[in-house]
Length: 197
Image: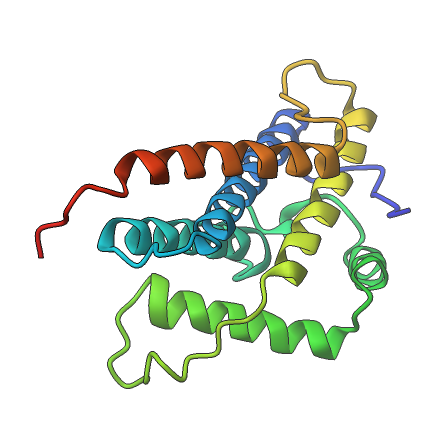
């Protein structure tokens, strides 16, 4: 278990505001990943609406993940939490079954995807050769961070912050079912609509 500092440099309100913002970023990003993955499995979904929608959801997930694991200057980066950084990293790597070197390479791949494809237009890069990393490790890192945030909230004993679902794994499973229903219904309803090219 991550050992937190006993005296925070932040006020309780600042810490709770950060935790609440991080939890919102995590849930929003995971929702987009669930939608994108469901769109990806659709057959004959190669029209512009579904391609654009899928890309937007993947982009939102990657952007959300970068807010918590990318640049430390992001207000919602995990390093702004009042936790012992080395303990956090050690526990996270163990939970994700990875090590620092692998995670750093993965982080660079995800940030390159964000920077060269979703956030900016980088004409020097061949978009076909852009490494699209598997997002399972990013999802697992989000789940890990969410559990840390839940522990921090239970220590804070605050009723002011939405603590979200008690089991993020169960919420993700329910979200997959919801996404399947919503996306398949929307796809069926729109499959005969001709797009103007």
